[in-house]
Image 1 (spheres, helix red, strand yellow):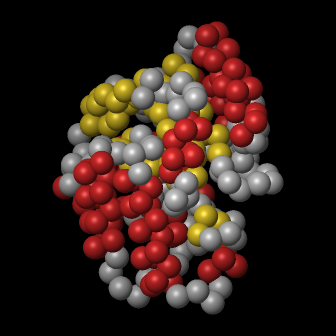
Image 2 (cartoon, rainbow, N blue to C red):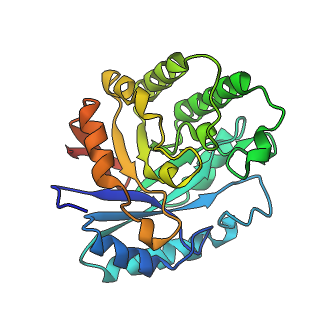
Image 3 (tube, rainbow, N blue to C red):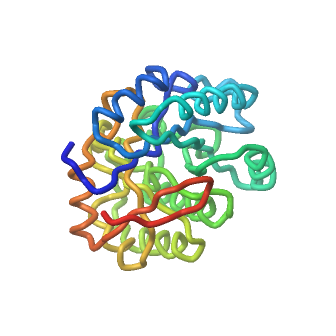
Length: 264
């Protein structure tokens, strides 16, 4: 990765959820990649039991203690502490009350579940479904997550693209409405580079519509969603260039849930 003025990656997963390595190994890779900040954000899906890919709610304090210790002894990169929390309609109060117990640098909200199944757990989720309607329902769910007031960042806001399914219509209006919701509620969207490693083989959100988020003046950050250390900071040079070409000039950084903007 080339040297830049400032680089952050706030979305990585370790052995505490569905990642493949310890937090320490991610820190080592972040230093090699030239990052200024590395943020941990384990999966948390309250109200869904026995999710092997998620951090058990009872283990959240242990996870935070580990990250706090790591932050204290790490000098070469600033370690940030977060969670990636699944949004569920009608559970906003409970999610907020749970998160308010902890001192985080940021909260990432995401939508994996549509009903009892997740949109990213296999292509069979899409079998027999009306993709046009599914897109509309998914984007509406993400709009609700943005407007909930719970989250600082929304992760992979069009994850429904993961297996390459496309609606029969031009979804530009879905992205326009979503970008306006982000702006109205002052929530950051991430350019998630991990889509390059999935069947859709491109970033989230769809690069064709990044200009809409720029036009609507939505704040952005770039995250790898790494589940193994080798993917920390992956494709970031391309991501930054893509954002600049879409009209972005700065990105969001977080500390104790206070946001500042730094030049891209």
